[in-house]
Length: 280
Image (cartoon, rainbow, N blue to C red; front, top):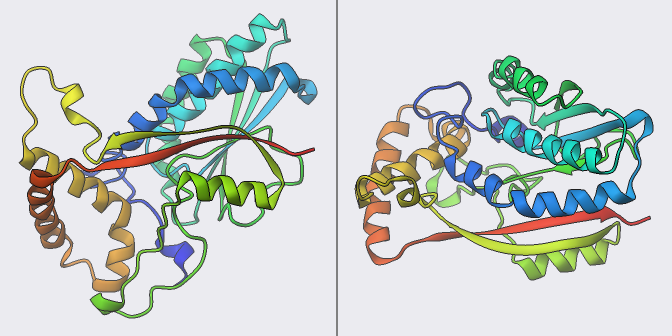
């Protein structure tokens, strides 16, 4: 089975689904909103779109509501900026992209409420499309998309097969580059100009204590939370190698190990925020 058929977040709306266990990713999206605002305003001052239609692609949209938060943030910024610049009423063409096994239906069920909220803001017409496939290959015609957005996706490697159903040979195809590596690769490839390149940290537990005013988040809560979002990310890959029967026990043990680990250290994820424009 190819990696493209395995690398999908857990679908549906169940207790262990990605939709229910992606608070960390949502917090990261909201944390970069100010930078998104600044960079999109600069882009709008330079770029004109044909017929006032902005084509926006979210690469790695997954199956929960986070992608619609990202899209609505982008639409809001463009809408407000267009009013300041006296542009005509806008049209948005949105492309939600992920691999073929992604639970797109889960996103589609959220669209009626999304469209209703957009109408309330008078953003103009908004057309949604699902675009299944790997963003390491071609998804759109040349010079077609105005804005690409991607969050918590490019750390997944684009190639390789899991070797054998043996623990000592099992590999998860994830790589987290340093900011220096990212900058070097982009400059060496030469197709893009880096406008913003920054980093920020967020705890493995999505800084849960910030959301809890009435009580302290203990180690057990943090361990369970971290275990559940890892399960939402990796379960499909692990089931393909080791079967479904061990999943509950596996992540129960993982939660207990995390509890021991965070006694010694408060682990953080280093996030890279990157805005680029195409080199003309």
